[in-house]
Length: 447
Image 1 (tube, rainbow, N blue to C red):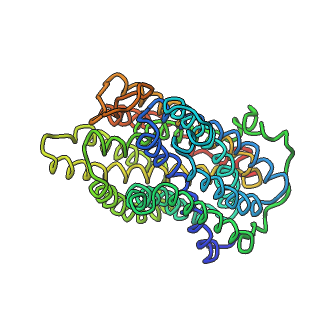
Image 2 (cartoon, helix red, strand yellow; image 1 turned 180 degrees about the horizontal axis):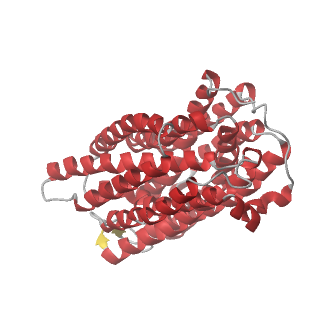
């Protein structure tokens, strides 16, 4: 039987594995993009492809690993050993560079760039395999196992803030660390932290007493059965909302730091301060709103969250002026508005998805959740964003001697306008979910 509160031990595990996992994802989703752009080739096509293939790898892995964790009745091993190996794969990126490729294979500079780009994309998929096993499949299912509706909003509110805290650490702190220890030291250090986290999990993570062995490998397709979809309408409507939200964010998010450094001309310190203030203020507001969501109708709060996200993105689209100071201030203000909506939508959708997920089938359904929260957004979002960047064709400042393989253009303001439009589309689906939420529990939801 679940406890009446989440418990101190579980909170420590959630904060440790949640934050370390999100730092690793933030490095992959944002900093690897900057790493490729700055050290291998300023090629937004490669960045886009890396994001898309990573989304596919994450989804397929979560479908299989989530089902296996249900079948074996074990989240602990998947989390612990997954983090352990995940850290090793992150550390290996410290040895990836065009110089090392040239030295190892004896090829010229142009071919070395192509091989290095390929290695980054493939390596990112391998890293995602272990990360998704540990975090997306097992850790997410562990949270669902150990929470219930009365305090799930508070837990999900904290989980929604962790990606932003990780983003703050990565966007600002990692830039400074690179200047101090270089990319090799950075990736080796981060990999060591992730691996140590996995070792910690072996000794301290405990599975929920309610978790039992359930299902077979055939249940990889469990979440696609018409009977399951019809029996859990509210869950799938929530996942569809998550998909729209995810597309809106992935239109601009992979290019955000590159945009701030190239188009807006922010220094590492400037974008760290802008990002930091926006995240801290947004997180504080959402801690209150996360607790409030446990006492209010979460679907009604989604109207506010989607509107705030859309307004913030619209403001970011217009925040570029001749005055660098004006740009810095207004981009920061609307960045705070965007971050507030970003966290709140994520928290509300996450809490609703957990509310509507049958506990005994939590692992099987993590893969379906990934299709809407990762696969669709990470394929469609960057595709839209990069199409906008290509159409704008804003040249890379101080291009210098960059080779002809690169795209030689930078992110454009239009990615924020497109993100705002996509976020506003959520407002058309929320009323449908709201009507379903007022109905009696559907067969299968509370089974």
